[in-house]
Length: 100
View 1 (spheres, rainbow, N blue to C red):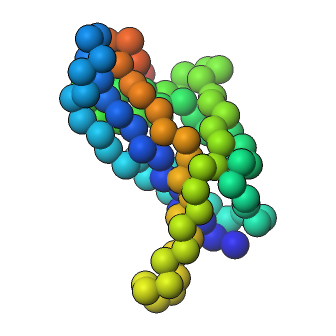
View 2: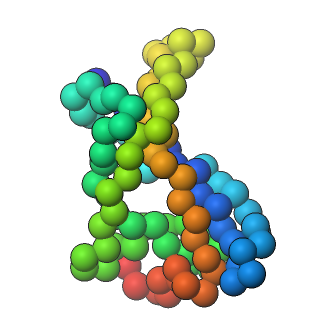
């Protein structure tokens, strides 16, 4: 089955004040049936200025739980969106610079 993986990301400053909230799209993947509570291993998320990006440096993987599965029956073909647990990124602490 084809799934679209998404994750809410809250970007905060050092004082924990919210600067922005975004829905990060990890992309579409084929997988066996998923359930809420399943775990997914992906690259950690980081910041390039205020843009959410993958931190693809060596050893920077994260294990995230599936918190919701949404089946959109209005769109044709139907879309199954998988939401991973939300993350909070702190400007200055989760910056990855120009490393790809």
